[in-house]
Length: 167
Image 1 (cartoon, rainbow, N blue to C red):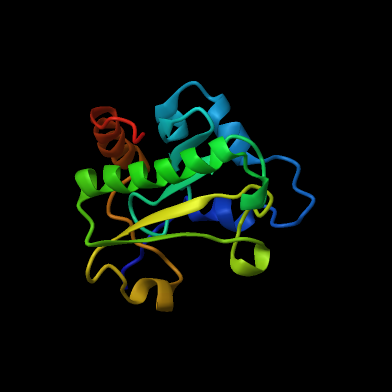
Image 2 (image 1 turned 90 degrees about the horizontal axis):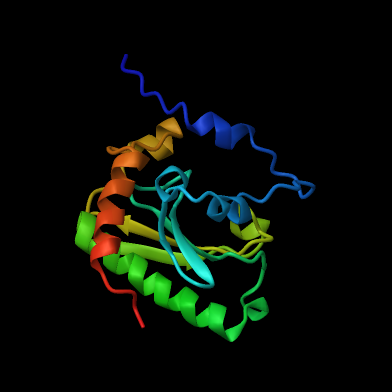
């Protein structure tokens, strides 16, 4: 029998899912000045792009405001504009870096909708490749990611630096 090890997953499994969680990683991540360590791909004035720590696929990005807000209506017009621009930028970075065949892009509002941190909205950009879904998530409750987050950060960051920020 073959064994696949996804040791990183235990941190997610054991993380508190209750509403009493006081620490918000989405406000902590940008405080780290080392973008490589924090896996930040791009910093805007109001929002930033970061690799998802618990990805569905390699290159799974999150675009989110620095400020903790739970609903789109709570964003300022500047935050909304930059959020959309950074969604476009994130998709372009992925297109040029890892050449996916498609994307899933979206928000989950509320715990019932799948939001892991419902008090801080964030948009997922998930690159997809034809044939990337297999039996592992269904039978083994395991995702197989063929590349480390550090290596993926190197690819995406290099592309981000080469692209002009979307106006």
